[in-house]
Structure formats: C-alpha cells, structure tokens
Image: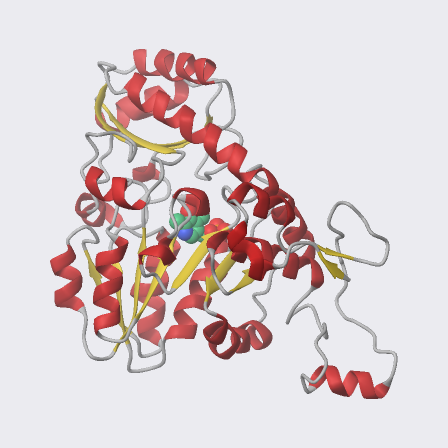
Length: 401
Ligand SMILES: *Cc1c(COP(=O)(O)O)cnc(C)c1O
C-alpha cells in the first residue's frame, strides 16, 4: 500500500484538495478510486508475523472490528479536514456520540449538556448515563452563566450541538470550552448541522468532535455512519478499547460510500447553503411565516456568535407558520417537490414537523422549554434548483390560513 497525501502534511492543502486525496492508500494495483476492502479478517504469511501484529511490533490489520483499510482511508481523510490528530468511524452517528460519552465517563462522574439535543443524544445523557452512575445536568446552551453554575469538580464532559436541532440556536463554543477546561472536563461538540466545512469546533477549544456521517457526509441518503475525532492519545487509550471490545466500528462498505461522499462535500454544502440563504431571505416576508430562523441572517438571535464561529449559515432553515399544527400540516401536505422526512443533509430537500415527529416523545412541556411550537417546521435544503424550491414552498405557504 502507498499513501497518497500524508495527513501530517494536510495543513498545506485547502479543504477541497484534502477531501479528494487525503488518506488514500493505493494497493499494488495502483487503482485511481479507493478500493473497498470487504473483508472481516487478514492473513499472515508466517506465525511470527501474526505474533508481531498482535503485540504491536508490526503495524497492520488484524480484524475489521478493530480497523480496516477502507475505513482507515475515511478516518484519515476526515481527520485531515477537521485538523484532528485521529478519527474512528462508527456504525452510526449515535454510536459516535455514545462512544464519546462512554470514553469520557465512569461511575461517579457528572456530565453537563445543552437541553436542545438531538432526541437520542438527550436519551443517553438524561436516561442511560444515570443508569451507570453518571449524573447529568441539562442547561440552556445559549446562556453561558448556566454552564458555569452547572459544572462541578467531578464533571467529566460537557456536550453540545450547534446549531441545535430543530430551532437552530447557536452556542458559543469557545466560552463553553473555557468552562469545561476550568474543571478539567472535555468538551464534546456534535457538529452535524454546521458540517466540518462551515464550523471547526477544535479551533474554539472543543476536545472531541462527533458527526453523524449519515447526513451531509454521505449527502445522498444511502448509508448510516458516524465519526469521532480527537487527539491521538485519547483515541488510542480511551476510544479504541470500546471500539475493539464493544463493536461499533463502521462497515467497510459504508466507509467507502462516505469516503466518496467527502470528495463532493464542499460542492454540495456550498450550493445547499447558498440556496438555504436565498430561501430564508425570500420566505421571511411571506404573510404565512411568523418567524424565520436561519443562522446566516442578521436577525438570528445569536448573529454575533455566528459571525465569530461559522463561515456561513448552513443548509438548515427553521420557520414558524401561522395556524399552529393545522397551518403547518396544510403547508406540508401542499408540497410537491420538497419531501416530508425527518432526515437531513440529503441532496433531496426534506421538511419535518418536529412537534409531531422527532420531538413528539419528549412531551409538551419539554417542547415549550425548547421553543418548539406547533407551527414550527425544519427544512433541510437540498441540491434542487433554488427557483423550483422557492416556487414549491411559496405555493404551499399560500395554502396556510
Ligand atoms: C442524525 C443526528 C444524530 C444521529 O445520527 P445517526 O447517524 O442517525 O445515528 C446525532 N446528532 C445529530 C445532530 C443528528 O442530526
């Protein structure tokens, strides 16, 4: 195997270049496109070689639950983009989040997280961790004083996503990182909504970054996957034992899809972001829209944090329509181009009604606390023509009320 671009030289390359070449390891055949190594195990020419692989004297692969050449290419490519020392691919975004928290905590520790979390992330923090003796406190992520008050000497991890799902609040990563480090805790950032191109949490002090690769990294709605990025020492000492012994590692097939997805990620994110900004601006004035939330607009509640921390407003829009659930449903049912789906980051534009889908189970009180009204809709902007999308959305909004 030969290595295409040494990830240690990654700093010299712009993201678009890193995403095409980073991490490529060519086999003896010299293939142009990355090979898919669909293999569970690896063979050794001699017994001595097997022994050397197992005691670490000779680098190389031993079993795909631990590591696999195609998955390694994906890991090195995204690590080079993120500017992280190391990465591990996981079977899903949730496997990455769970791994990050498990690797940080032991019984007796404490975790602080922002309330506005992806549903399953909130379940891990609120329900699962306490079962194993890890207490958790939920705070309003945009209120820095609440983070300060919540940390304790035994706090092991702070956890947030920004922009948040589904109301697209933006949390000041640097401020939360400083609080984490003041008590010796790690800050974990779920960077899915921003994508690695529009926000680099590690530049603002995050210790661990996680992605659901299912979203923009695949970008065409095919495979589930995730990734956890951090410093080499922590990944080797704390994350690898979980990867090896509990089995959340990414499959080589999915890694190959994600690896190819990374090549076109900048093109897709740029276009989808430009269209999202255009739609947010055009639709903000529609008479059926009572609130337009887009991090790339000056009227966003945390516009100053967005300017410091993000390169652009991302591919996601949240909007509130007149008439509560009835208004929202009449709009959704009038759409022809934009599809109703709770997924995001796809080439196809997808819209969802959080109150009755992704955030149905948390109950009315928790929804009110998170500002998820019955008229709120979350739109993931795809790759369709911007004019066609505007036409479809406007026509549907015209039906409201
Ligand atoms: C989708 C998502 C996840 C979970 O990812 P899966 O790949 O579906 O497991 C976690 N966090 C955020 C912000 C997400 O959007």
